[in-house]
Amino acid sequence: MSDQPGIPDAESITPEARTIAILGANGDLTERLLLPGLGQVVDAGRGIELTILGAARTPQSRDDWKAKVRLSLETAGVSARTVDDLVSRTDFIRTDATDPAELKALLDACPSSPVLYIALPPAVGHSIADALAQLELPDDLLVAIEKPFGDDLADAEALNRALAAVIPDDRLWRMDHFLGNETVLGMLGLRFGNRLLESGWSAADIDKVEIVYDEELGLEGRAAFYDTTGALRDMLQSHLLMVLALTAMERPDAITPEAVHDRMAEVLGQVRLWRDDPSTARRARYTEGRIGERFFPSYVDEPDVDASRGTETLAQLLLQVDVPRWQGVPFVLRSGKAIGEPRAEVAVHFRDSPVPTGLEAAGPTVLRMSLRGGDVDLDLVVTGGDEPGRLRRIPLTASPGKAELGAYAQVLAGLLQRDTLLSVPGHVAEQCWRIVTPVLTAWAAGESPLEEYPAGSGGPTDW
Image (cartoon, rainbow, N blue to C red):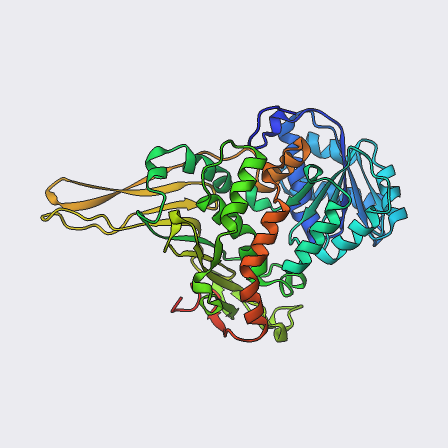
């Protein structure tokens, strides 16, 4: 392992042999994200010796599991050499993750340093922690658990206590793949590597900040998960609050896990709803419509949706950060599905600059950082040409380049490297739940209307 702190680099991972045992291996997440991410890391690492054990309560033949692994890796574009290598070193073991004896058998079956990857709902996480507490665990065991980290604040606190009782924090990874996003990673350099930006990164120069992740996609066959989760829990409570933390935090002394996580927790601890008013949060769900040639039925008519739950497909929070740097600056977090012209960006709206008499104002400047691809756009205001008294905007775009690893693979690389920078600390996860709890309470009590918008639109017209 590299002794330099910082963002995981797959090429710096030592060729230490590891076995990743995936609890919940029959789930959609494993096939769609986890297996392709592992394949990418092995492809880039050139020398990682990785064994994959699938584990689930529902039995599956070895051949069927190997075929599933192969199809997932090939579909993701993993090299043929890596596909053949991983398929040759994978197996499936039927495992009840809540049974201590079966968990022990799974760990004993690992031929190299074990990574127990929990890709199961939070309620099962509690039971797994209880089962692990009854075992003598290997000293080199790493544990990774997928979001959501609990179902609410009390549940997150209880889950953190249960996990802390069985595994030290430096061997526990709370996995949020959004932290591997190119823009999220690049925020550290953008914020703290550019004196010009950092000098204006405060309420004196910034009017508002938007963190938006709207997408054209609908449920894509995931209604069983999404209908019990919704946009607020799925995107804002976790992913977008992580982006807010990196956008608003103070400068860390070093880019180490401890320093960065402390700064993230510090600023999230000062985040609350705008004027403590849950009614500033809004929710909506899509009705039927089209995006291009694709027809979307109304959300309530989608298979496996229970309309009585009132699940939102679009959520928006208005937040404030109670520190001097951000006094009075609104932070808008928004995410929605079936949006016709989707946005995925951090948009920092600078205050309008006063201009001398004789110059025609050009309006405020916006710095946009794409959450898809990592491009940074900024309009530079200049005069010149045939109208020297008129301000003109010249768009500037910086493209940091395509990352070798996708977001999921970046976070998995950190896990395999034992670098916790891209892991979500327990106290940060709890702060995220604290921030959204008043909204969840108000929505559960029916205190906020569930609005509607046609699929293919930009959301309710007055948002």
